Amino acid sequence: MPALPLDEAGKYVAAAYVVFIGLILVYVAIMATKLARIERELEELNELADRREPSP
Amino acid sequence: MYGKGLRALSLATTVVLTGAFALVFFYAPNDADQGFIQKIFYVHVPMAIVALCGFIAGGVMAIAHLRTRAQKWDMRSYVAIHLSLILGVGVLVTGSIWAKASWGHWWVWNEPTLVSFLIIFLLYACYQPLRFSIEDPERQARYASVFAIIAGAFVPLNFLAVRLAQAYTHPRVLGTTGGSLPGDMRLTFLVALAGMVLLFVTLWKYEMTSKHAAMQLRALRRKLAGDEAPVRAAGRSAAPAATLHARPDTH
Image (cartoon, rainbow over all chains, first blue to last red; front, side, top):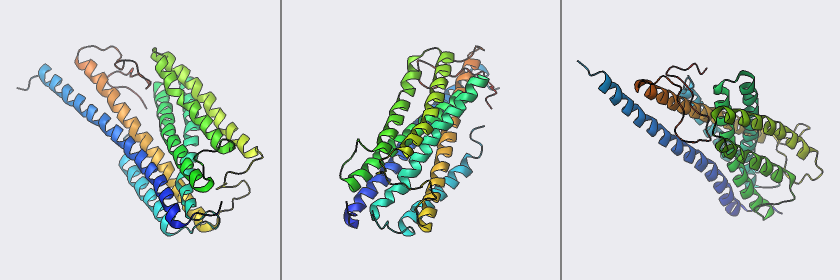
């Protein structure tokens, strides 16, 4: 097949790079939810530790 | 600590990947044969190479797990394979986009490189269900390691088989005789490859840090609750189980 003209090829190239960036963003978003869960657990643990050893 | 050096690594990844994309669009010339559409290769091929190397690395880590029985190697292998699968999705989608633009079809079944990558991807797609199907953490880790080693050995064999195949319809970015890329395109490709390797290592460390922190938290919760027994992750999971004590020696 002959090479596509720039205006037609551009949308395919853009789509490929958007897929790549999108994958990374989705991954980072999933990791962010896990980080938020860790933060929540940390807060709970902090409260648990406070209850066990009340500050003077 | 897995988080050590993560900031510097993240910065390096951002700089190299941004530089690579700048080279792709402002430095590398359009391919004489394919034109602008060839720019897809600067993201598609590095992703494929890093994904395949990640699968192999997962197999090597699985060997370390079977040799040492240390859970950290199972976790490392799991994260490497998990990330490679995500990159594999990107490879298949970007490859299909290129195929549609270049060949007029989203998928071509008689093209050995495409089909062989799909076979590898589908093989590894069984990895997580395999882990999920085994409840006992020890057995889960052992079986997963055996799977990772066998599948990891299949990756280079499959690659060689495709290279030796007769039908060379898939474009070769790096040929066996030194390649046919001109200097500026080769430089761009190598920077993109370096960026993709850095991205993989950064995300691997990122996920390892997250999983390690979650394990430590669960162990600490159990300790605060007054139970020194090893901690098991709540419910069945495909991820390696947390069997750590409060201050585990995981490195």
